[in-house]
Length: 133
Image (cartoon, rainbow, N blue to C red; front, side, top):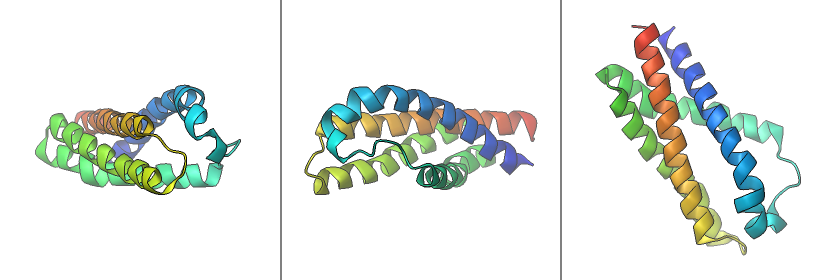
């Protein structure tokens, strides 16, 4: 039961945060710079696959260590590191190979990945420790 609470808590927290970010960043950050390579509509299947896999990674690499230590701060720190690493992988690779990419997009996106993953990991760890212990 605790892993279900961890997964669902992370999914809801990250989903809410990311939807707020994407509604703002799409038209204000991404489209002005990389609009020519963006699809008109996002591809639902790929988005679902990303979220299912990424949330599982959050549970294993960030939330699980927090639960095992009993410390929400462990989940937050590991979440920040995981988010920065994962988002940096995408952004810096994109910056290296795409003709239209910008350093400010990479920096903003990496910071966002670190923040959102840290918060979602902390929330999910707290919920799990509170309701599944």
